[in-house]
Image 1: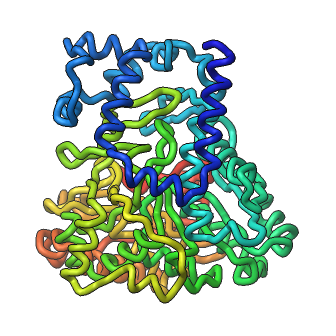
Image 2: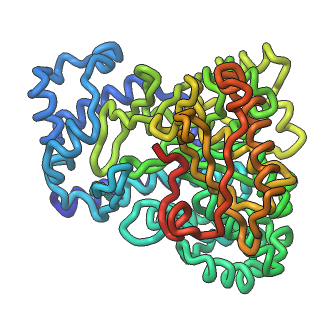
Length: 501
């Protein structure tokens, strides 16, 4: 890769990035995403050796791909048939890993590390997703903001990527200051105590359970979160609207649609979409109408709902799972990420809600004057291997979470749990759930019973399969309570898994 070529890429990307956000989003809305993705396909098929070999192996002539129907006939790529099948350099433009300037690592569900090279220009387009949140939801273009990056740092993609994107916003001119304690809770709280009073708002960026743990620990130490204009940016896990309400109360938030934002992200290609005030408002409607959620999304659990720019990340759905295409250090065409979910146009979403007598734009009009862009929606349930089957009913972690987030339970637990199907001495199956107690909370039979009853009530309310498939005498879950940080179920510093098969 010639140095002047990298410089030209940087200059072009920078000019695009510093364009005002509203101008960029309107440009995207006026661009044909189907033609844009066909153009990207030809760029990749001409310049990426691995993809050229992949097409040859499938006897595909890229010159014959002219329409979106042609594009949708292309074979899918995934970790097995593409990422692990071709050398790292060959998956980069011109077959040169030096065309990138940073390598991130993801471990994935197998623990096998995967390397993802990228160039700074890739970060600029992802930084636009952060810009949507910081400007349109948090109003961080008005007054000083402290961004506290609480994702793990190191080679893993979350922390460094997030810190870089926030710094790009600062470079663009936002009054934003970034600090990177990573997942060191003691350091995070020290930063809050000493620096938060100097800023008009503080944004905590991290995984939902960890941020809740930080907030709860801060409350126990007397930190007045309500004085600091706290906002949260999250990624990595689906959470319930009860969880959002619970955390909102603890940080003093009175407008959750504008104080929270979840990212749909992946190490493979950065941020694919982001919550907006509009998507949160709509999700909260579905949370309060579980029958409508089941009708609309087709499952008894509530998915993450975000908006996305189809000229940046082009989504498709095949057999109930998501595919996406997008430019990156390793560009990906029809990449099968194995997330269950779907896509909905802006017009289709608002038409359905109108039929239900709900107007989210009118609902938001009383709160803030930030613009709401007619971007499409993508909803994500996550991976199927986090689901348990019990008497033919699918049980999702999201159903259990709501039971632990009820007001009479939430102060006693961290929100972490492990669910599994066990058998008793007569080989009858039962639902067993290990629950992590909050710090300094002791296990009691009364608490154990309260948790069992709360989870049971929410399972019956949210999961019609559970209510109808599981015999009534087998519906009450068996609860085991474990101390905070139990090494067998809740080891500290390890990414938590909610299911045990």
